[in-house]
Image 1 (cartoon, rainbow, N blue to C red):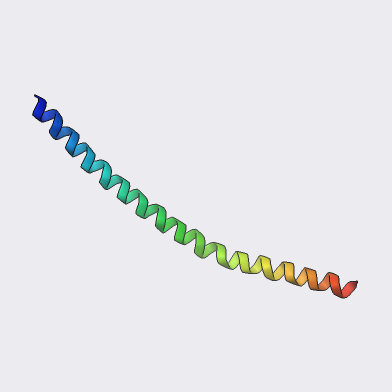
Image 2: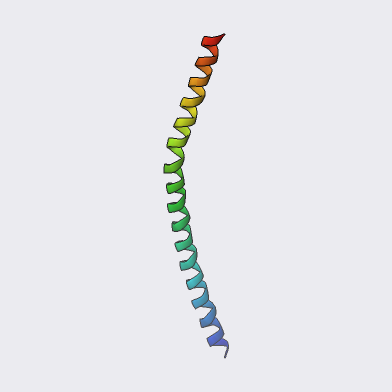
Length: 60
């Protein structure tokens, strides 16, 4: 009886590790996608703020 409980625990540990690894790889992939989407947005925001700043300086 005790051996089967230990076997179940080992199987559970192995499965949990596999699920954690899969989850981590999905998170890394999602972060990469978010990063790729954020960079153009960041560049556009910086360019816009730069244009607004130069316009304000020209007006003054």
